[in-house]
Image (tube, rainbow, N blue to C red; front, side, top):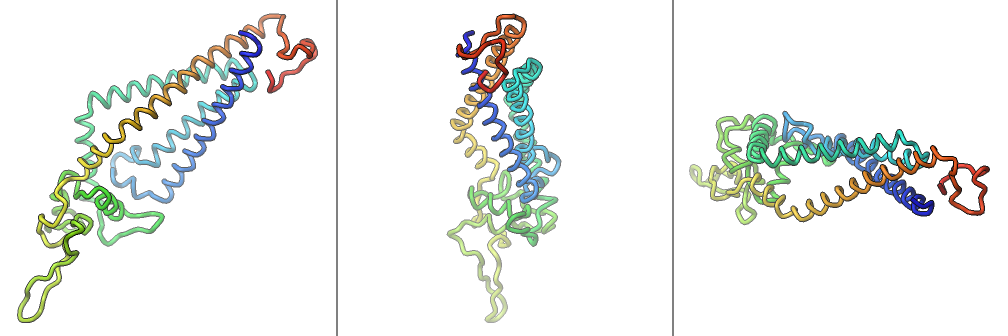
Length: 282
């Protein structure tokens, strides 16, 4: 490999890993912010906290930080050890992504059922209508209300998932967020004499006033609509990983060759190879 080509690849590789390092720091920051401010999201899947958004962001941030650190150091100081570690980490990421994708594809039905069951368990045990949390740390009730209003759904599979939960044991009620916007939020029913009893829509026990579809179906449909975006992101990540694999091995072989030969020439013809010092221009 010529000196000019080596320098270009080395700089590109180093800057790419610097950008990845900065992105990893951003992921870590978002993960910490979600962990501190939106801890209620973890209780949607009480037995699988690792699948919460904050855990995923933290995991991606830590992995990206470590990998990009070895890449930057390996290219900057021309360390064969760091370049080999970088190569091995990328290979491990490739294998992990392949295994996770294959397992998710093979057991997609079981994973969907497990996810739905965990959401039902969270509704039954952790939903508290009177606990709204705060603006920066919403409760499970506030999160479910936001999801149901956004996707116009009710419950996991249907509104029956809200029946007889701990928050209203023995009742066939649903949250107010399950009510269709065209329906009145409260209904007037006749009482004795001239008095009337005001009944909230969610407590009316009238399913015709509520959304009939479950949120699991709506979330699945939303995810399928985003498959093009997910596929483009996946291809971009695969391209960056492949570029890192090829480039790290090219740099490793070139550094090894330059250190083993006595004809290590300067990249600049005007600099004496015997007196030059290693710098960023290498």
